[in-house]
Image (cartoon, rainbow, N blue to C red; front, side, top):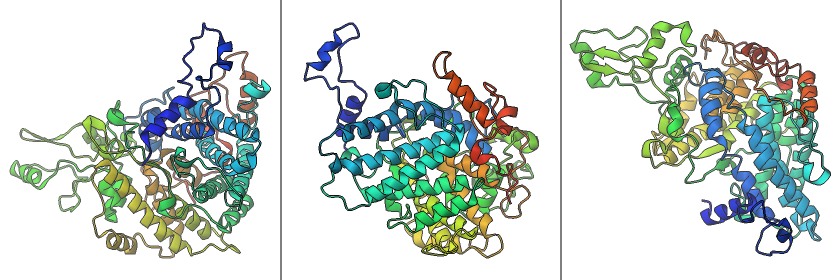
Length: 560
């Protein structure tokens, strides 16, 4: 658990809160008064950047994830509000609070006479930059990076926008170099210690994170260059430490006082379960059913009341269903209004009113809502994600000639095990409904052994995809990237069919034009190079003008 005093002190230093001189005073005093902090310790700058990977996410959860991207991926459904202008907080957080501090850390280290002792600290900054940079480009495409943050040193206030391919290639180079440094036998290395609020200076874990980020890039490269995908996969699997494949190495934000969603969990509309996800979770008796969604009002007593009044429940509800309390509906409400009406209207039985549809588990997503005392734990990169990537790439043939350290089935089973345990751990911290008991190992083994879950050689890739998809419930941007790059869940699948959806779905967000006279020329150039219509935020443009990684991806629901 983090040291709260150290963390708070770090945030104040990094944000300049100890500089108390007003704008009207003689700023020459800053150069002479030793009580004023002008060069904050790199440790505190690192803490500030790490904290800002998460602390900005309130808007992202409410305006993007719960209202848009998780609806587009069909993990949930809600009222189809317009794509608001309150998007892209990830972008401003990156360039305001994350990347500048990382660059400053490198600058300070490079100026030290004993800089060789700080090389692992320096290397970790590139891993953080790539992590959040991927989060930004996944939705926006081209952005400044190689020329960014040069205003202070080089007076370059008009950085060029790097293409998505350039970003990927740059991050691959930086991540590979960082892995070499982080795993190297370097003498007398300094450490961030507890200022590193994720890994507490464990360089091996930072190297594993870098390797998993390389796998993320490898799969984004797949639609453009499969040879590059295989090359990256080989590099990662044959690296001495490899990627994150153990739960103890997950990139987890565990602040005991943080809840980015809170009372906004139902902002503008309740979020409900879709028919597709509920049907699959129920059909496999998936432990995540009770973790992700809440039961409806159809208790035994309620069913007796319905019977007493000689009423008939809607036909989509089967009275003999042992999991009758979990019901989903159409992802696009217009496709089945007879069922969709029950999202907002209860079923009336005399004076009793029963909610029939399952909403998302509010406590799991917002443990401090309505005075709750649970803790919001956020796992930004999970071992399950990595395991499913490995299983996917082996199944696609990328493992030929590579020491994959296990079969696709091995990694698939390991990914399921990790996903169930991690989602349950999030529920435990949130004081929410759990899906596993003290007999978790036996329950997980039974789940994996089910005919509809285990790899049987007939549709292995789809099974791997669906488990990957289910694991992304708490990583909405990754979920949306998954459905874009794969085209799964697939229309008319006999395994896990995607719900019908008539609404135009944007495949990207937009970056607003900078003010005239600043960097608008480079912005326009980037828009043109990507094939985007500048300042066109319409669903038609956003659904057809794709990012580089996505140009050759299948349409939603059209996976191969």
